[in-house]
Length: 336
Image (tube, rainbow, N blue to C red; front, side, top):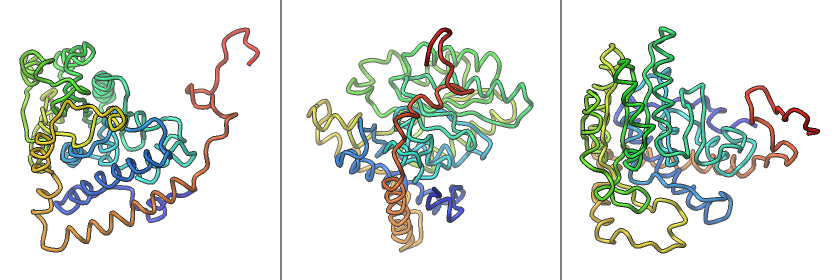
């Protein structure tokens, strides 16, 4: 089944202009709002971790990358994979568990991957993408490939040993990898200030990795910082680290609406909404262009929804398919 984007041959995002970046911001925001609606309607089972509010990080970083560059993502990863070029119709079908999905409905919200686009997978394990991206950067160097790898992670990953081990290896081997910390202030419901000793940039600097703080609600600021770090990595200067100060407008997970958690005040959320990256990006465009792009995105997402909900569910007898690289391998002596 061909998706609307594939039929229109429009999979590659245009992030080389302010208009293209604004459109991607709007696409990610609209995609997440649509996904929330489908969670409420029971079409997306298990819920999602919404990326609403943090769109400028994904767009700013991916705008500085080349198609052959690689990324690893997180449990809050829809924005990353969309900005790297994933077809929204395929991603939405994946979230709804359909055969037309990016990974035939097997990966779901937290494990979307597309190797052809350099997306080595979102990851439900906090901080795990750092090691994968470091390995991808090492592999590129060994193969003589001009590739940079980017690992996205949240502030909650700063206490994970695997991430610190990745910093060490990347610095020792001067690998072309960029570590991007999306500091939205909370690890689930735990304020970062009560869980992270020192600073995020200080941890990277301790390994000799150049570390920069940036306004993660400003797409252009993220792009500028990323472009500098990526150019340095690509020229053999080793890894870099960005701490993008951002904020999620929705809860950590859609389950929060049912649990009625109160770790953030309404005033805090309202204040942060005043830094919404979409109006800031729209202000850079000619009058009327943002509205045109909004309408274009709305049409694309409507088509994506139709594609997702019209795609078939996987057959139960195929539940064990795609577990291994060379197919199902039963244990010795098994009658399976």
